Image (cartoon, rainbow, N blue to C red; front, side, top):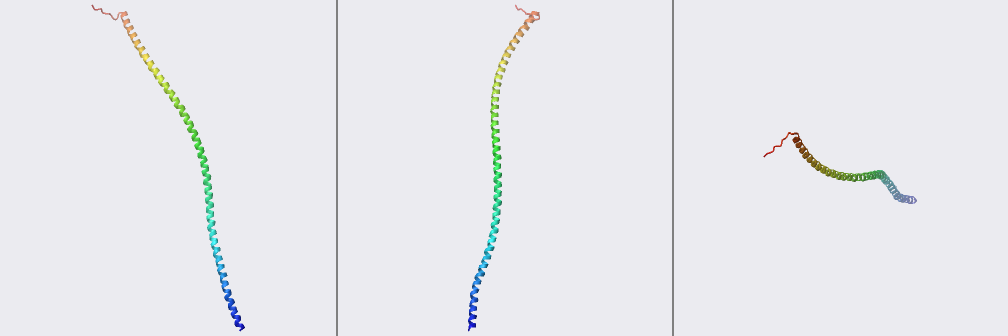
Length: 150
């Protein structure tokens, strides 16, 4: 009977160890699965982190380039504003010069018109005097005779 009892006890002990081994096996499998999933997640995270770093560097370069372009454009705007002010000043000077020249031209035209009128008057007088003296000269030389009519 002792053998039967030992056999029963061994069977009971084998059955009792078997479920614990099963749980341990399941836990071991679960641990392997979690580690495998963790490695995959870490790989995805590393790729994403690398992409983020690359994008961050690109954005940093774009910001630096943008700031340089802003500085260049501000300098260009300042230069063009100065040029515009200088040209506006020059335009005002030229407008004043044109106005002065137009006033001088008007005055010169008036003077010329007066001188032309004076010249025409003097010319008419000279022609009259010249004609008068030419006729007188002809009479004095006897080239023209005056006919007296009764």
